[in-house]
Length: 387
Image (cartoon, rainbow, N blue to C red; front, side):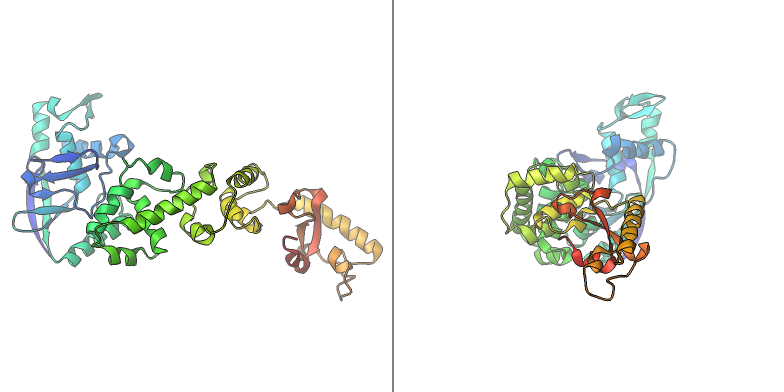
């Protein structure tokens, strides 16, 4: 890959700058010769957090601080596209076109109303640019390595660059669009920032069963995303149909995997809601996020819930009581061993050789308190399970 060093002023780069509010991206610069956000680039992020980053770019220019190298890809003899620097260039363009203000001496000022010398300082600031030229694979490989702006690329942002094409363009219009009316509904089940491709990543993960790269490679030039969107909607509709009470612990669960395992099973939403509420309010359930898989799998695997264990004082008290009674009767202090005809029928186990057990299983209503505690040898406790 070849690179040529160039110097442009802010005024030159931002000439003809346009910004698409709906899509959240800068479109063009350099009098239309520069594409600021190619399809493989992430959306504009510096306006987030009340615009702290975009204001910092302008303040740096006014103070004479360098804002870093910029890299352009030479598409042909007259056209360029931004490889690295689109966040900074878009910040400059947005400021020059009055999309935000900065504070000077405590007063908010838009570009048009700044002192003339400050406006000139911004416009005449020189930016160092490397114009690169190479094959598509070279450009994409280089793009994967950049980390200049302080915002590391997310995995899906890299994949979008590697497999850019009609499929990625269509997918981003749906799953990377913060203006999509469905985003609020999806947010109950999905974690991450829609602009940083988190929702698109999840949709691809679900439909590809974890093989995102393979799926994107196969569908790179598709003219629709019907399969992915249909599957994604099926998962969300199923999850929201089974669990009608939305809780924060539902967000980010592996709903794609749960759908594959359980969507063919019938569920009564009313009964599910009642069980969900009961478990969410249960003090002894430590892992509230495990409630949903526990319910879907028939309320059998209590390990998913991490039910609170008996504390040490309770174990020691029950052990002492059982051991004293067993020694007086000449039998084992493990009730199950005492009832057997085996070699351990009269064995007195050490505390460290025993486990605390619910007499009545927690899943069947048994409480985690001293009245429902017994000490069993480790072998019998593990054999008992959830009976």
